[in-house]
Length: 597
Image (cartoon, rainbow, N blue to C red; front, side):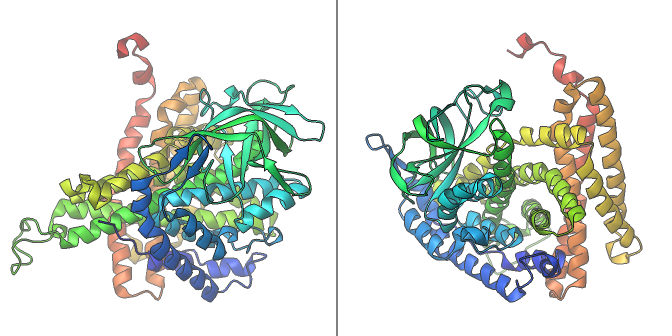
């Protein structure tokens, strides 16, 4: 049985037009002034049609068939229908939706691209991984590429003629990139010979396009050790000269594909480089800086992946809960004409559904807010405003990536639980979401890496600049609505938590100065604590925006009641995370290694 998907256009439009007021934002950002609501609505409608009609029916196909690898040709064949769907994607102009017009793209803001990506990933998360890295490669080439590289590599990626990848990981080197061994030897023509093996390369080989552009981290012969000696290279599957002409096969070969827990329709490859022609992008030994342009884009995108898989799992769990008859409500039969009541009348089923609904809708509001910050950062003509947006999105990126993907795992698990034994059976489709969701909190930096980035880098090294800006906004919102009776059940608690958030941060900072292990001990709890408060802020703002909007009374009531559930049942999770942080590092390091066995 194939699960269903309907694009949540009503909630997406509410977030864009009522909560975030993107029409006002776009009116003052260069390149967005002519972007009307009518145009945005048309883009969303067409994306919904493509996602629902083309991609969603292929979701189960991709999981059942998976990708196949031919060892003789070293080629990968994607599941039936995947290649044709990509052709339709390119024909529809989706590949260059947010890419620069100078490179052949449509130049739409990321705030419009984000909900399109969510719909694509809800419909078919595995398929959505193929264009995912192309978007990241576009950003890296746009920011760091030379003019000829933009002409030779960027334009074909933007058109969808080629796709891109990000090649970081090696068998001995995952998070610690300072250990990587891939070499880059200079050639007489200005290119480099790249030699080494990369693993876990998403879309590293496939049958969608003739050429695949790999962005590869490698070391030059005179490179200093560690991360300060890493450079970034453009290494195409088919050789490409400085004139953009494509030549014969490069010395790049897929060595195999991984057999994974989920995302079976996505080709996760071992890629071998054997003296392959590569071109340096950006400055020598500054490859990590260039790669983070790509990775930060990808981390926000993976947060949206988590949101997307949670949305689809929730939609089907809700449908099942309304239809499946099981027992009577504890307070008496709600549907006496039927042999039993539907699942949705039972208290704990409602808890599971509301948990999903509140995490998804709150996560969508937070994720789309981050997208507006990306647009302000890159488009605003006010340097101070752009700098402020950059600091905010830098601070929010690890929270969004980790929080939305951890929520995806929780939501997919709850959705499966609502189905009961039928959820555990593959024929009903729910177990696929539990498997697919699991990778989102691992790749592009695990939750633990995001937590260290947040507490170690964004708070300790950068002195909490982004947090201070976020708290300023939160404080201003609370002050604005301090006497608003309609928000009285949310504002006082939100204000109290904002003050506590800063106090907790300062306390952790002092403890970390005395003992650096305190950062690692508290990091994940600090991130989740921060995430729950950020979602509370999104929910309070959503209620205020709904009340002031022209939405139906049912819509307004649903927002308020969902926010009330979130504040009553999920926001208290901050207490457990606070207690864990306050416990410190001692209990983690007291036990000798030998006693773990």
